[in-house]
Image 1 (cartoon, one colour):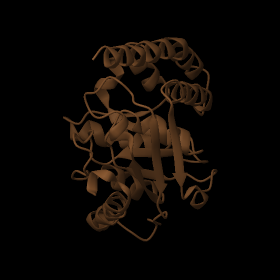
Image 2: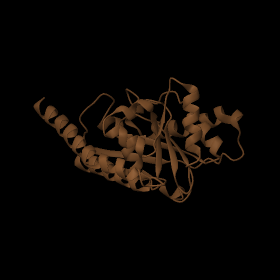
Image 3: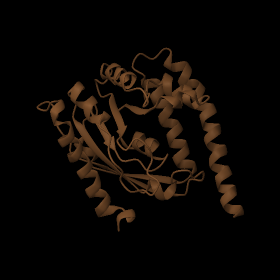
Image 4: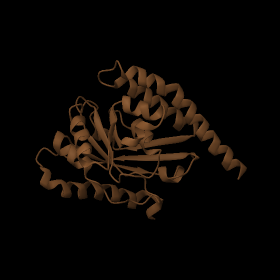
Length: 243
């Protein structure tokens, strides 16, 4: 019990320190960075420190399927707060993560997220959410990509939940390839509502890019099913949550 408390304190303390040390520079550099590259690199340093401090390794499969200079819409499952830093460190593309608008209210961290041009949407206001997505489309070029966690929130037990269509709609609007991304192991290391980060490995599996140029909005359900099928198949084959 004491060890668990100490480890939880260690996670909270180090994460807070890293956020304070790098959050302010992200906010400042974002004011002068036209592409958002500099604040994003600072964000990567923040993610690396958190993973390294808590002895979390990352394994990536399928990386060769991606072109660094090409933009994509990555759609992934979501079971842990470790998912965003794991994906950011695994992929070389500059990412615009999609998250809830309320994140921007968190001191330093939320301000940095907003200034780094992440895509923050108001889920209670569909019109506002669509406007945020439409605005984001303009910046998705030259390797800058969007990353959606299709379940909308973290899974409590690590099992796959119903997918939302936002990522599919953005990909269709921007005419960008969709890349299914399966995250395995993060739930074991830091499940929802946990404070402590356990040491271990997060596995990132990159699926084959799906060309959307020949599809229209009427195909959104079929595309959503195809993406979910890839992720579900990987989880069933490789995740202990499904064994």
